[in-house]
Length: 144
Length: 144
DNA sequence: TATAATTTTAAAATCATTATTATTTTATAC
DNA sequence: GTATAAAATAATAATGATTTTAAAATTATA
Image (cartoon, rainbow over the protein chains, first blue to last red):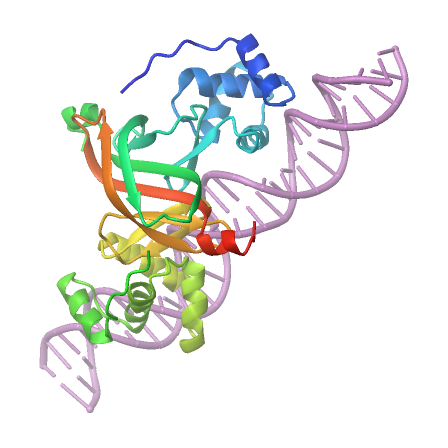
């Protein structure tokens, strides 16, 4: 389930931003770096808590605004597997998400096949497949 | 895409509540009746606005609490196709949802086939498939 | 380096939802 | 049918994630 992708350098991200007409700032670089290299589907609050260690002046507003800006520029997607917390994912390919209710982690899912009917004449902009349950580790540890 | 199901009478609902160990009240009957017979996947606010015409003393808190109670009793499901508004569906069979960004309507989707990989050892409690886009009517009217 | 434009902070505002508490309604015993 | 206990509801306050605002700081560029 885990995929090992090569880590992006800040220069990779700078080039990517340039391609997408995104002005560069320290926070934008660091927020995107965290999303693309850690791939843990963090919430805004988790991003804030993580970056605060290195950049103590950061504010939650900046995290929220930057994420909204990235969504607008279509370089990240929102993961709504849980109603009351938005999570963010810099991987744009079509895949699903599984949230473990034990440990709270969100896993990526490969979708081998999906066939829907009754969508003739509809135009689709977004597709989301979200599952909830327990991961093998939590089941093994009898956490629940 | 539209399914024509026979309408439930209040007595049907009373019997259904009894089966599910749900105490009867006027609001519970009317809220469930609206969900099961209209099948428009309304928000709590829409349910409140609709029922207020007939039952002016109803409060929003009652709508929210009743919906949460129904979820708890597993006779309805929550539709989270839109982040900032919970919608509710009394149809429990596995199906997807499509929200039209033009008219705001939520349509049911038949899922002919879904194959996922990488879920060995996982235990799944919930599955949600949510799409967004434009419906044929809105496309035809060139609303967007 | 100066200027304009954009980004960020800190704080207030928003908005859907939940919790609280007094009151009303419902279920059941008598 | 009436009394009693339990549950449901109304009105309101509280919550919490997210957005907005306005002033200060940073960045781009002339």
